[in-house]
Length: 59
Image 1 (cartoon, helix red, strand yellow):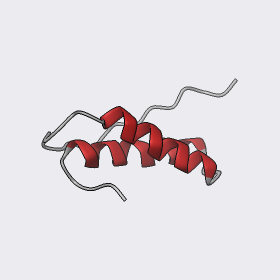
Image 2 (cartoon, helix red, strand yellow):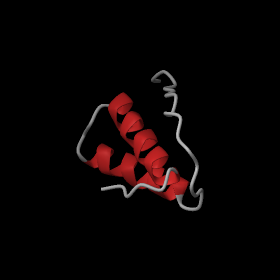
Image 3 (tube, rainbow, N blue to C red):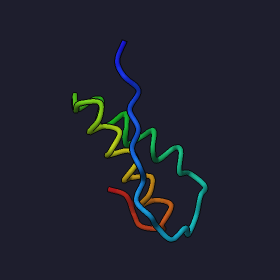
Image 4 (tube, rainbow, N blue to C red):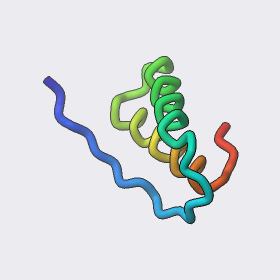
């Protein structure tokens, strides 16, 4: 199997938490569909979720 990947999310001021997991999953799936490497897909998903939690719009 492949090793377990981890990524530390950036520190953000929390404005909302509803939808954080949905945002994470959507960003991760989009990265996987683009055939990004596993570590890059995880980084993209964590950044997107952090942006969502902070109240920023996620592209």
